[in-house]
Amino acid sequence: MSGTSIDDLLSLEEERHPRGDTGRVRRSRRLLRGLAGVAAVVAVLVAGLRAVGLQVSLPVLVAGVLALFAVHWLVIPLRPPPSSPAVDRNLLGPSEVSGNRGDRHDALRAAINSWETPLGWAATRSERFNGTILPRLAELADERLRLRHGVTRGSDPVRARVLLGDQLSTFLETPPRRPPSPRELAAIVAELERL
Image (cartoon, rainbow, N blue to C red; front, side, top):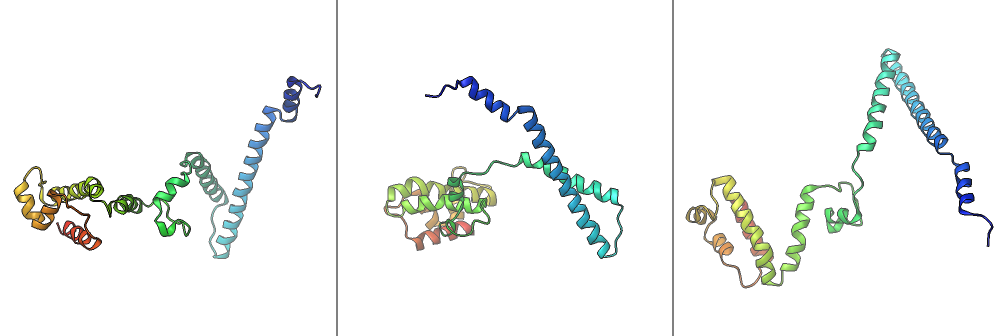
């Protein structure tokens, strides 16, 4: 057993890393790095401008570069936290999970993927289709009717039935005994898009 107490261990740690000096040293290093970056950018800009025959006042150039760096330093703490891998997987399509993840936050892709799972597990069981997919299709039909014609199936059922057509109206009103095939579902979606 060691003869060192907890106080000795803690005091040794404080001696190695005094709190006040570490923060100041870190800030001064960060400031020096930033100033070196500003100087490098100014030097490159001066050389580039002189190469093309343009002359810009050095104080104006330095002020502009300092302003850009200041905006960068102010914006860094404001960036959103990284998203979790589970969210990224839900936003990506199945073919992209292992491939290119260039556009991770595509809202259209997220909406499409939110339909993929319910359609997949509702393809074989009519009660799942009728309980999950059919109400969504009915909401879409009502929304399209409302936006394009100013009616819904609840507000004016007769006019809505005429606008929807007999096949689509019957499909939305009476739950099918079996889930529609992909071809039938494509025809239903095409009729919805036609509204």
